[in-house]
Length: 230
Image (cartoon, rainbow, N blue to C red; front, side, top):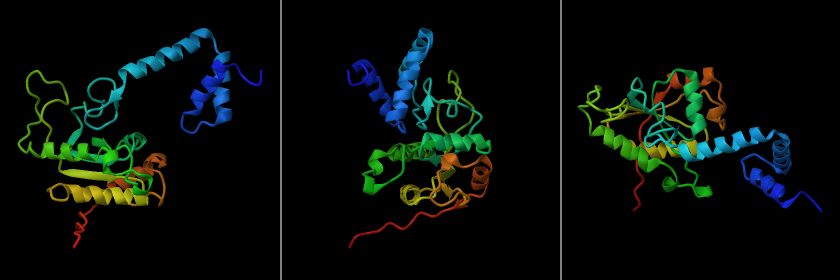
């Protein structure tokens, strides 16, 4: 035998598919599980099955949810007139940890990166535009719920401000400008978080104080002029 039994090697190969896990780490994870009591491994397997079967994406913001909507979108205390657009789930969680933002979110699932083949079709941009337009139809929204509706259900109030909270990178700037073009014909205030983050830095790794300052110091932006071909 030149290595592990095939079933163990298959497990190692599965671990290697996880992001940031190399051959050595995958091997350690597999051997660690083999040393654990049977009930611990069984509990892990059962929990993975529960996550697979019960957890999905929020139909509004795209966050993970256990139900129809996530805890944020289903919270009637949130300010539904302010929408913070982020690239990924960890960015949302980083902003939530500041305790300074009380509106709703929209997760794009990435940033525009044409060189890498990531265009508007690969992101949740269409869902964002439709969400904003749907809200704009409800100018006469009443915050009181209709009889029989649960918290967070029913018509949504009109969005009055959209905050772009992206990494200070070329991709972040490109995405923000594209979205500003798509949404610029509305009367919604478009803002960006202040430049308190280092250029090229990741939003999810920013400390709460820096991120809180960036939110409170956000600036209004204008939609870039559309480029027309001759």
